[in-house]
Image (cartoon, rainbow, N blue to C red; front, side, top):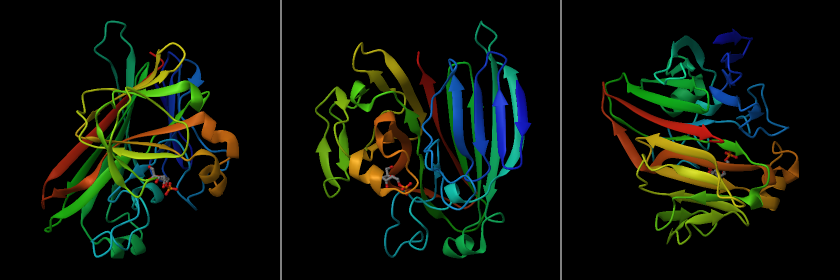
Length: 298
Ligand code: TA6
């Protein structure tokens, strides 16, 4: 594997042609190439200069998902917290022959963010002594992102975490999301009311913003082709029991200045692994880890 470092991005590639690019801003994966093609959606007007969270790829959401609640330790933070709009540091790489028989290579990139690296504004807003280690592991046909959260202070803190993955699809009307049937979800397009998923192949036919809850992490969420039911992506998780399915659709796509072109809602679907229903409490001195593993075009 090779790893190259530009001023604010780290790129790793495998001899078999796969590659991944990570921006130090937000430790945001902005590109994942496999089977010779880009797997992630990145808006043509995504800000890559640190002026605004990157619209696309895999933003890291921590310590709060969505607009922070009132009268809470996270109340003074921006939507989706500070991790995706802070500059992380590159901690290094490790590569290995993976276990599988083909001897396919694996390369892992590690990134860190701690309270000492945080801006004064964010540190004041959320004054806990935390440390995050985010690792991005590239295999021949999969990408894994894992976040370790450490509490290095003397006070417990509550957090939410989510990997806000923008998957690239050719045509949103030709995909289905599977393995959500009979699961409970909060529908944020219907005043956050609770519903039960009736479909075993969810079609996206309008603005969709749903938090599916308490999903067995080992059961893959599959984005499949409507035409032949072939899986395009399969996402398994560790410790992340919620999955958000989001597509802004026409009006919301037009309404986001950094979402371009407007019609690009047809070429993306967010399937986001997280722990966002309620709060994880991390005790002083403890650590927690969560991960997603995305297999592509199997
Ligand atoms: O993950 C879905 C969501 O929470 C939507 O409600 C929408 O707000 C989206 O995230 C994007 O949020 P952002 O702050 O990146 O514009």
